[in-house]
Amino acid sequence: MKPAAFDYVAPRTVREAVEALGAGRDAHVLAGGQSLILEMRLRRARPEVVVDINRVPGLGRLSVDGGTLRVGALVRHDAFEAAGAVPGPLGTLFSLAVVTIAHPPIRSRGTMVGSLAWGHPASEWCAVAVAMDAVLELRGSGGAREVAAGGFFHGPFQTARRPDELVTAVRFPLPGADTGAGFAEHRRTHFCFAQVAVAATLTVRGGLVAEARIGLVNAADRPVRARAAERALLGAEVVLPPAGHRLPGGHPFARAGEIAATADAAPVAEPYAGVDYKRHAVAVLVGRALRQAAEDQRSRAAVHRGGHR
Ligand SMILES: Cc1cc2nc3c(=O)[nH]c(=O)nc-3n(C[C@H](O)[C@H](O)[C@H](O)COP(=O)(O)OP(=O)(O)OC[C@H]3O[C@@H](n4cnc5c(N)ncnc54)[C@H](O)[C@@H]3O)c2cc1C
Image 1 (cartoon, rainbow, N blue to C red):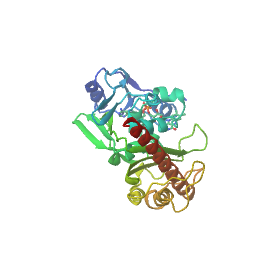
Image 2 (image 1 turned 180 degrees about the horizontal axis):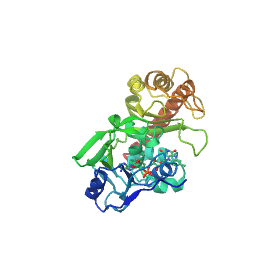
Image 3 (image 1 turned 135 degrees about the vertical axis):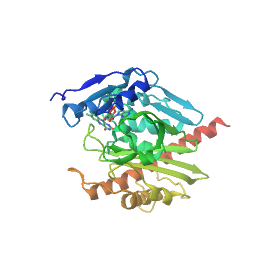
Image 4 (image 1 turned 90 degrees about the vertical axis):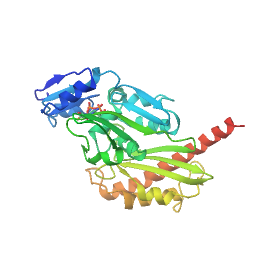
């Protein structure tokens, strides 16, 4: 189907974009267009005005400032596929998550910030953003403000963004070398959205978990942090079963998975995934993501020790 008629504007500055969004008409931002155009063609979205931000300079910038990574509104998904695009464990987490998003042509146009602004309940970037305490930068007619990812998502496709606001960037704190990252996802086919996805990091000191971060998507009506599971992991000894062996039932990672499934997740049934199925997926995937994070942390620590001999 063709989209309903709409006006098109292509601002050259953030200020012009914000003016177009705040002009009193139903205006939608066009970033990568990988969700918006489809919604318009299906006529589920009928914007009066499309505000194409692709000609606004500076929005495609990816930068590291001290301990913070800043991702501009036009940084495409595939920017995170290259090794070393983002330093340290955050780069590992991004590279694990990004390859699960759609397929290469979509990743070459779609943007991380667009995914967050869209607020799809199964978006991988949303799991990463809540797990890592990302902060979104917004600019509207009332000025600039920041919203923590933990408070940004209000429900499926519902966010704290006001209609006249442009999300200009998202910032992530960069974890140190004592942290490892893991990502696990289950979906029906390679090109489907996730039925459940889990982003996790573990910080290990002296063989014990000093900090755990777990973000879940499609495990509730919005991206959530598995806080109860994270608390249960604090102080746990990190002992990994040999490669190829499952986590034993009483293992702290398996227990954290069970806690996440029962205490943190509040799944919504979908046609191919009922509530019990999703809870089971959360339990398994949290265990897998934590194990991968612990293995990543271990190899990172080995490299670090080697470098200091
Ligand atoms: C076949 C297919 C499979 C896909 N599979 C996945 C998947 O597995 N996982 C996944 O996460 N995504 C998936 N996607 C979606 C894809 O990742 C999109 O790129 C992403 O959801 C939106 O990013 P975009 O830059 O394309 O945004 P657009 O399509 O341009 O915009 C999406 C929405 O967000 C708003 N928006 C975008 N940027 C901003 C901004 N800076 N400020 C304010 N509002 C903004 C727009 O107004 C619009 O309402 C898939 C898409 C397709 C077509």
